[in-house]
Image 1 (cartoon, one colour):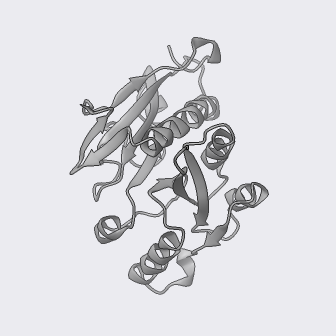
Image 2 (image 1 turned 180 degrees about the vertical axis):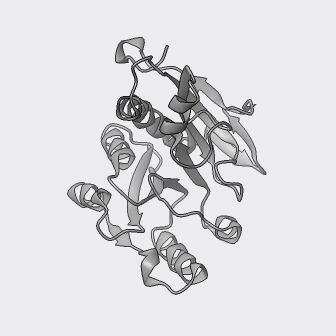
Length: 224
């Protein structure tokens, strides 16, 4: 008998393209199941994506609360109502407090469009182009109280072309994101990926500080 799929809650705040990648992947991946999608914005298109896939949704709009503590208490309650084993941030544009991260009912993963620890924060594509970098990429990491600073699980490198614009680079980085996030969620769901006191292991082997270095098929034109 196959084990029950790992319940996942996805936190969003916008278009939800990474959410869609996770939804599409779970159609042929029995290891995890998205049991709920929570947005901090009422008009996030990701909510429509979830509803079209038959996934329950909730909105916890930060603008409707008088304090960060009240917002995070409501968000904690919303997450807990789905009893997830992992929480995936996918375009959730609110910084979570250390107490929220500590008290959350499940570990939290985040996806970031750079090769961490470089280019933390916002506007990464603009910044790497301005710095004349030749490579950027995608990182997935466990969330800690350091912004974009938790232990890294995996990365995919993306070449920056000489004629790249912000939009063209963003499009290729998105392709890498959409491939990588379902992979990492699946590892966790299969109990292959573990994080014990910020020491991350995959299949019992401790990962390097920059996580697993993965490559996509070169035919996709994403990695060098």
